[in-house]
Image (cartoon, rainbow, N blue to C red; front, side):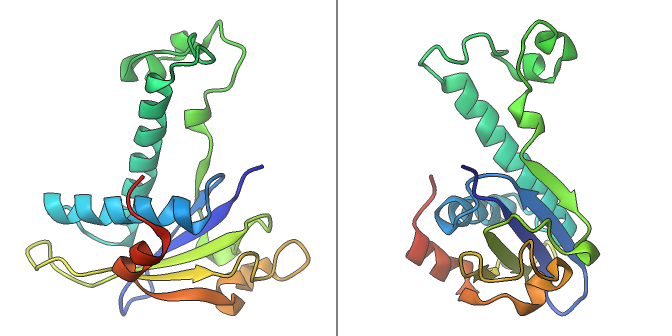
Length: 183
């Protein structure tokens, strides 16, 4: 069963929001290491910009990791999948296969004003500090909801982020201490 989640990337002291849906592995142990890796990569490369960029890079990194894991699969189950990025991106590679390329599924860019679908189990808010690309890196602030601690199918899902019960509020570094290091 999938553990769905929504992540809202926000910019400190602004009303900008970029919201991402993730279909699986949405529990803190799956999300926090990915956010840590993303923050480190953006800081190391000087590519930290704003919430929209961070959300897009989150999806990119997550997709690349999935594709890389697929290439490394040794059990023969996926032996008919393309074995290169070029192959993965080529429609012709998929014509004779009877499966949906899962790398094209699993994420969505959401309209924050619409709330959530209602089947998510976790909500995250990732607040990025306002900074210039030339500033010293600073830690992101994170909120993680209680498991299903917000309105779901039977509630006003457009208000889910506003009324969620938060199990964690603090820095990404503190979240990493609690939920583990990079996977």
